[in-house]
Length: 126
Image (cartoon, rainbow, N blue to C red):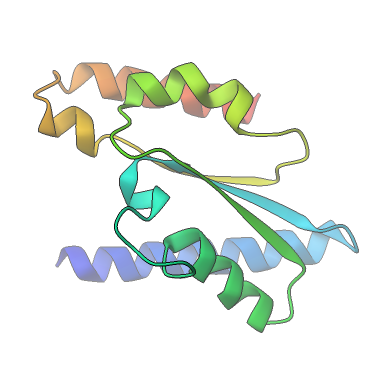
C-alpha cells in the first residue's frame, strides 16, 4: 500500500514540475532536494541518488532543469531547520523536503519534527 502512495506522490511531483517549468519560460528551473541521507544518496554511487536521477529524468523529457542535492546524512529536522536559510539559494523554484527519519530513529517526540517541518514549510512559502 505504501508503494502505491509513493508512486502517486512521484507522479504528482512530475506533473507539478512539468507544469511549473512550462510557465518558467527560458530560465533554468532550479530544484533543491533538501533532507537527510535518503536525499543525500548515502551509500550510492555517482549518479544513483534521487536528485541525480530526477535531474536526468527531467532533462530526458527536454526540460531545462537543475537539481541540487542539499541532503546531509544523519540530519534531523532540527538540523534541517538550522541550515535551511543557507542551503536553499535564491532563485530556487521548488524544494523537495525529506526529513524526519533520523528524528524517529533517535526517539525524538513526534511533536518536534512536526513543528520543525511546519516552520520549514512556512519559511519556504514566504
